[in-house]
Image 1 (cartoon, rainbow, N blue to C red):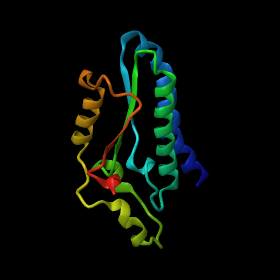
Image 2 (image 1 turned 135 degrees about the horizontal axis):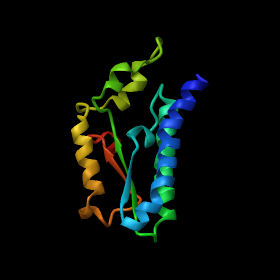
Image 3 (image 1 turned 90 degrees about the horizontal axis):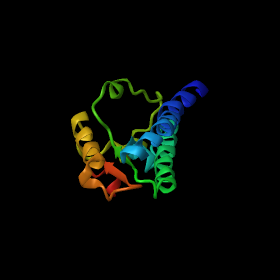
Length: 148
């Protein structure tokens, strides 16, 4: 529905945009960084998830655009792009009654879903001082799903 579309985009695109807008002046002062949480859905098409895929694709491009805009300002802006992760959200996913499972096979994955702690560890690595040369990158944290 239009309401669901708007909500998904508000959470996944507008939220990170306005948060970045508020945080960037302080991050420039402190030399901090932003790690947005994108998704493999922003890197590949997935049946039955157009609102989610388009919102995460927009977040990927927002990340890249902000990284270019602030290239010379002493902050880093990156994104992690996980695949399926065991959270309460994945328990409530609903697909149409007439779902074509064959269309979903590509994004189901060949490995297990990730645990939230695994995603958090990867994001912490991206945000760490050891990754100080990483800027404008979109890191796939998807057990190889977007590899092939």
